[in-house]
Figure 1: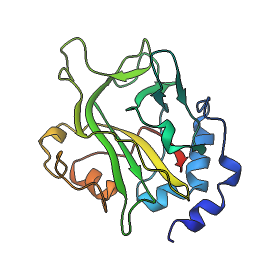
Figure 2: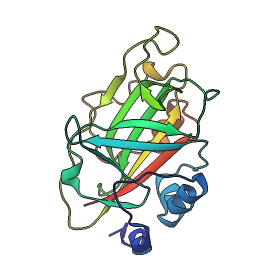
Figure 3: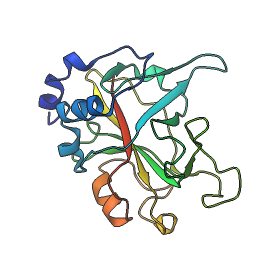
Figure 4: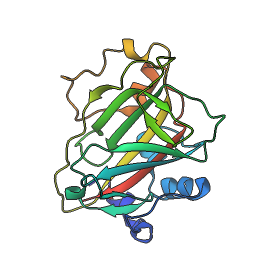
Length: 207
C-alpha cells in the first residue's frame, strides 16, 4: 500500500505515550522522517510545540510525543490541545485545529477532526473557548467531531495541526457536519479557506 514505505523508517520513532514534545527541531525531523509534509502537501515550519491530551477519566489521561505508537482504544475521548513555548506574546487566536489520518483512505486522507475558534490562554498554555467575549468570543465550532478510530493491523499516521484562523474561515461550506470524511485533502482545504502554514503540530502512529 502507498503508506508502507513511509512507515518503514518509523521504527526508531516510537516513544512512551506518557510524554510530550520538548524541541521544535526534533518534531520537524520526525515529521520529515515520516514523510508527512510531502504526503500531506503542506510545509511544516512550526513556531510552537503542541500537545494533544486524551482523558481516560477525571484523574487519568495521556499525551504523547511525535512518532509515538498509540493504541486506537486509548483515543476514545475527544482530545484537548496545548501550546508550549508560545509565551505571553504569542498570537491569541482564533485558531483552527485539524486531525487527519494520512493512511486511512484509498485515494486520500481521512478527516478525523476539524474545529475553529480556539483561543490561546498564555497562562495555562491551553487552546480553549474564548472566555472574555473578544476576538474569538464564540464557543469552539466543531465541523467534524472526534470519534474513536478502529484498531488496524498496520499503523496509520494521525497528524494534528494548528493553523491561524483566516478572517472568513467560518463562512466556508466545504466541510459541514454532513460532509464525508474520507478521500479528503487538507492542503486543498487550507488553500481554499485561506489558512497559512501550520503554526504547530504533532503526530502519532495509531493501530
